[in-house]
Amino acid sequence: MKPAITINNIVKFYGAKSNKTEALSGISFNVNEGELFGIIGPDGAGKTSLFRILTTLLLADEGEATVDGYDVVKYYKEIRKRAGYMPGRFSLYQDLTVEENLEFFATIFNTTIEKNYHLIKDIYIQIEPFKKRKAGKLSGGMKQKLALCCALIHKPSVLFLDEPTTGVDAVSRKEFWEMLKKLKQQNITILVSTPYMDEAGMCDRVALLQSGKILSIDTPDGIIEQFQKDLFAVRSSKMLPLLNDLKICSEVEDAYFFGAYHHVVMKHKNEEQQLKNYLSKYAGDGLEINAIRPNIEDCFMALMKNTE
Ligand SMILES: Nc1ncnc2c1ncn2[C@@H]1O[C@H](COP(=O)(O)OP(=O)(O)OP(=O)(O)O)[C@@H](O)[C@H]1O
Image 1: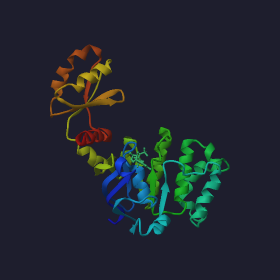
Image 2: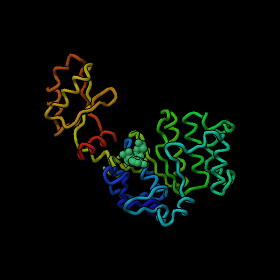
Image 3: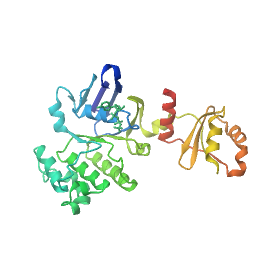
Image 4: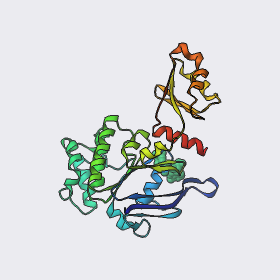
């Protein structure tokens, strides 16, 4: 399969020599044509820096990258025609209406809303009733839909979406991913970043990014399969002392809060009985110990622990 994006050993620093931040430490990976590829990482992982380099808004200090076959430095003008970019913040003109924002983005790309309406139709009809409303007065979910329409209006072949679902409610987040799946069917390559691990499952492949380094790249199932340890969800009515006890248990590799439970990673296989014995003092406090399958967040936690 032909890569739509190639990233080869990209390094990015900020600040003067004495106070340097290494935002990206030699990142390399490819995104295939028509792929929905997710970059999952917490705040400060380097997601925005990478997006700005790929969309030709920032120069890397080392390495090369191409988008749609074009080098991001030499052929930046070509890339600007071919890439759609939805930055995390400030992509809309708050004082322009919905309609005016869309018209503005169509005009700067020398096209019209009519010409590419088919691309945005499914998304735009959801905000059309509010087309006379100023963007600044829209809800988070509506802003997100409008920003996506604006990024699509010039018919890009590659779409860069930087944290499009941050600060958006759970229903709108789900709807947004459904929209991305539909766009993928139109053979648009999508690189999307998110701090929400639960969104990883919606991507064809994901890269887990932490402190400018890639911890793993694989399909969501592939990442989960790499997790080879026994994992338990544990709870009782005394969650804090329970966590403290788990953290000092010699058989436990890691223990952390996870919703209503603690997730407990064991050092060795088949030690459920040892865990039960160790936690027996919580038997009268509604102790529950369930063996579970890891999710992406567990994998991320384990990978981060390995790089500490
Ligand atoms: N202009 C800048 N000057 C100095 N440091 C910067 C600058 N931009 C980013 N950084 C630092 O580089 C690192 C990566 O930031 P980046 O914004 O790329 O990450 P991110 O994953 O997008 O996180 P966030 O969602 O918080 O923006 C962080 O440590 C950040 O503080």
